[in-house]
Amino acid sequence: MSDPIVYFTDLRSRVGYNLLDKTRKLFEKSGFADHIDEGDKVAVKLHFGEAGNTAFLPPMYARVIVDEVKKAGGKPFVTDTNTLYKGSRGNAIDHLETAMANGFSYATLGAPLVIGDGLIGLDYITEKVNGKRFEEVKIASAVYHADVIITLAHFTAHELFGFGGVIKSIGMGGAAPSGKQELHSDVLPVVDSEKCTSCGRCVRWCPADSINLKEGEPAQIIETVCIGCGECTVVCTDGAIDVNWKTDIPALLEKTSEYAYGVLKNKAGKHLSFNFLFNISPDCDCFDFNDPPFVSDVGIMVSTDPVAIDQAAIDMANRAQGLAGSKLEDLEAKDKFRSVTGIDWEPLLAHGEEIGLGRREYRLEEIE
Image 1: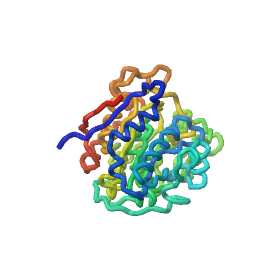
Image 2: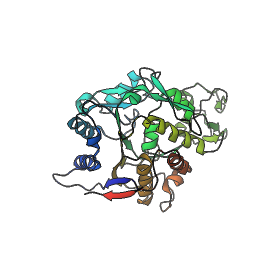
Image 3: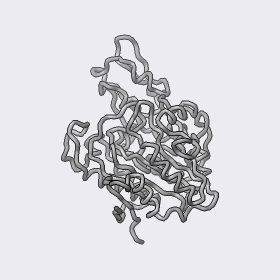
């Protein structure tokens, strides 16, 4: 069996040949237009960006893909799912308003915006996976019922996954909120009382109202109420909340691979993945801020194999130049993502390969 191909282009451009042209060429090189049948409903899956965040993938890249899908005879819609945490995307109304404020609309995309799991996140389909972590998973209904899915992932570091790419975008991003809760159930944040300043930011962000705060006292997390989303670990500006894993660290990563497998189970030959490796921030795009990139921009890649493209992305990003003035303290670290996050990301890809989601060995083919 030959290794899956990951097509890659750097970010150099010139008059008459810009990055949107390069994105279009990657799509053409993949040959994926031949996999789109006339009338296919095509989900273009991306992240609309949290209010206040400016690192998310700009909408013009999605417009390129929408146009190519239409040329191939498909009916595209642009989609994401509601969040588990209390941000600006917890229900379809707020989510769409945030998307439009961030530049995503029919006018900019040429396709409708559909929140994949409905008004309040209850629209999902249960899919059997018979995995190590899950017997079944809860997939957002619009994602499940789409004939084709094209994933546009902004590649970043991630505070719980080590990195966020295609598999996280499909797995976590394709799950309904109740599925996201299942994914996070092995995470239990803990408060360092000596560092806590009782600012209340974690209380305002917590979706489960699991944090108590009394005046003059450090925050307290109610373990029996906490759903393990882990968002408080990042929104705490004092570094007073860390993750205390209930089990081993790979649990969340293996669960996410199984969710990604469930999302793609009925999409054989009908899934294409992009990773956009620029503005690579040390946290995901789910927060209402973004810290400066910690490695230099790399390029854009596409593949039909979600494991191969994430492996290629982490390999190339780790070889990129570390940036001074960023969260990365060891600019020469061999694994810059692990240096920034402290997370061993390997189980995400290893388990993905084990369950047949894709292969870690790949062949990189560069295009101009």
